[in-house]
Amino acid sequence: QAEESPSSSSPHPDSSSPSLANPAARLLSGASRKLSRATALGSTRTGEADKDVVDEVAREATVTTLTSMADTLALSESSRVATLFGELSLADALFNPSTIPEFTDRGRRKAVANRSENVAKSRDPGAILVPEKTRVKLDTSGFYSRDSSDFINASYVVPKGGGARVYIATQAPLEATMAHLWQMAFSKGARTVVCLCPDDELISKEVYWPAADMGEASRTFGSLSVSYASIVSGIRTLGGGSVVRRDFMLVKTAKGAQRETRRLVHLQLNVPFASAEAVDALGVLCNAVDVASAGPARLAGKSSQPSPEERPIIVHDVLGAGRAAAFILLHAERANSRILGEAGRPVTFNFPAAIAHLRSQRPALKPSVKELEVVLRVLLSRQSSDAK
Image 1 (cartoon, rainbow, N blue to C red):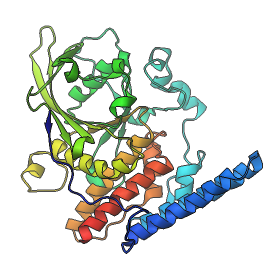
Image 2 (image 1 turned 60 degrees about the horizontal axis):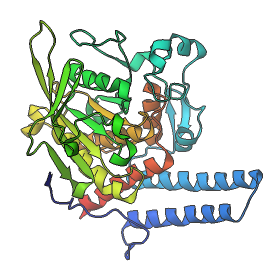
Image 3 (image 1 turned 135 degrees about the vertical axis):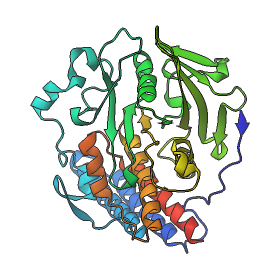
Image 4 (image 1 turned 180 degrees about the vertical axis):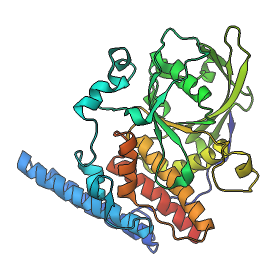
């Protein structure tokens, strides 16, 4: 594996930093103190009533901190916004599960995801809902499969702003559904798959790409063969090993049909999402996604806008839920700020409305507090670098 030099981006603001002259660093230092007080309070009390008080204190401190971070970035238009679901705050979007309507009982009964033959294809069918209006339908024509269903636990997602970019949020495939992920990538013309699961999170039998460390150069999934584009440069590490890039060739061979080939870049975040290491790693990952998924005009530097040649970006964590939502929010905001900046317009990105919009397309797309904090840290770090 060819090792690339570690990312040269500046480290994220941290409360342990010797200098807090940076507004972002002061803000994060204050956040750490608030959350530490809430944690200390929790360690000195027991009992359900006290626990509720502690949870409320921690929640208020967290929401205040996150809102302040968003305001510092000049991204949040208001702490409360009007959305399709009524007035919404960041606290509502993150903590109130009843804020966003999910499936009605009738909708659940009619959902293809809940048919008996499809339930086993989802890791958590009771919690990860797949609405019909955004469900990705597998193209089964020309693919060998014993299963004629067009179901895969995956949803089209178009975030607010983000330059009209289309994502597909999905789960890490099960052993029985690996072929479905590659089939979806091939038929939808995806150039990029973003895996938010580090190596130690996927059990060996659910690693859905050729295991180069075991001498495996290719694997076959039904009508599709997946192989490394190059034995020498097919695998590269970025950001000091925090991101792994794999270049694959997908070849479709079906009886009586012409051989078809696609090239695809697989990018894996190889550090825990809610960690200090992830702040720099996610910046590296976003840059790698931009390069891997860009159409010809973007690569030639003629336009920052998505072109018709740009295909959906497939994003998955284990369930197609919190981390996928956080990454889509981050990547979309970066694209949105670039486009607005080039047009000379103020950059705004409203997190409550953005989260509500994601959840209207796939209800599980709700980042945890820690995941959203990491997203905001990445943006603050980027803002600090741009200001230098």
